[in-house]
Image (cartoon, rainbow, N blue to C red; front, side):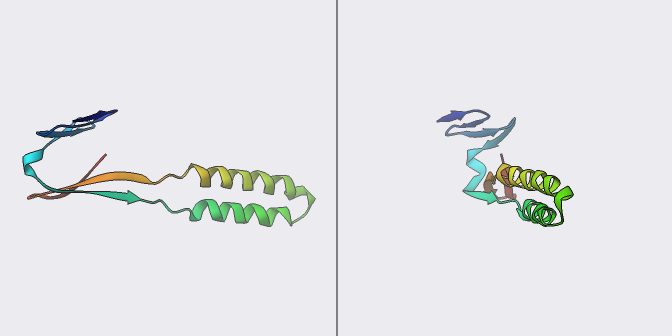
Length: 94
């Protein structure tokens, strides 16, 4: 039996975020990772770098834009889900 945060797994049921799935109907289980694109933060950092070389007035703004891009880049995390397969098809949980 597993009971952590908002996920509970017993021999009869799988409960996640208020949704209950009967184990008897589940034919397979797999994990899936959604990795969000990091293109936005990289473009932001590149634009900030351009600002660094456009003159002294845009230097500070360029540094701020680079810092924002770095924080945004570091904040992006993959999303992990459990995919349940049954006779009704696949369903992502979590």
